[in-house]
Structures are given as structure tokens and as C-alpha cells.
Amino acid sequence: MQKYPSMADTSRIVAVVDDDSSLLKALERLLSTQPWTTKTFLSAKAFLASLTDGLPDCLIVDLHMPEMSGLELQQVLTSKAVKIPTVIITSDTDAAARQRCMSAGAVAYLQKPIRRAELFAVIDAVSAGSEQGPVAT
Image (cartoon, rainbow, N blue to C red; front, side):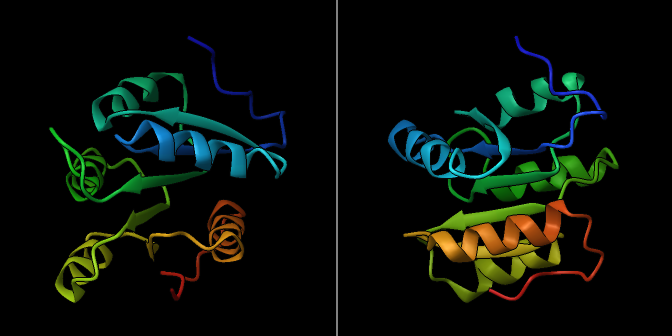
């Protein structure tokens, strides 16, 4: 398993968790157009196992996944006091789901299909260390 870059590396690390391998590959290709290091995971459990290698600057996670949802992953991270700016992506239009994610600490809740400019703006804002709270989406 490849280690995350050291702190001397100025590249931001963006982790993406989605059980849809096609979408995961598409997001990886999209993110590779930016000066970020992208790590992809097909499950929340695989992502959690990777944390021994270091924390990403931003986490993009699908809301609906088998075994552990994006919201549940966010709650696990919070319970372990692991602070990673988390962007929830989903095709779910339910306002209550959005509210649950934002209340649990998500910095953004983006609807699929994801708009490139919106995704990049959110990643830039949160991975640059913005302490402004949730990003409007």
C-alpha cells in the first residue's frame, strides 16, 4: 500500500469513497486534472483502514453505500475525533438527508451529477484549511 505524501509535499490529498467503481474512476480522472493527490476506495471500511497511512485534506464520500453509508462513515470519524472535511455526494434529493449530513459535520452536500466547478471550489475551500464552516451548495 502506498503511503500518503509527507508533510513536506505541498500536494493536497483528496480521498474518494464510492461503491460504484465506474463513478470512482470518473472522479479519479476528473480530480487528476488538478494538482491534488487522489486516493480512491470502494468502501468506507477500506478508507478507514487506510487512515494509518495519514489523513487526507478532504474526503468525498457517497451517501448511499452498502455496509456503511457516507453518513455512518462521517459519524465514525467524529466519534474517533478524526477531523477530515467531508463532502457528501448523492443523487438523493431528500432535504432531510441533506440536513442529517450537514448536522453531522459535512462541509458540503453535492447532488449527482456533480458539477466540476462546484466540486473543485469546495475542495479548494476545505483543503486549504478554510475554517469558515460549511460551504454553501
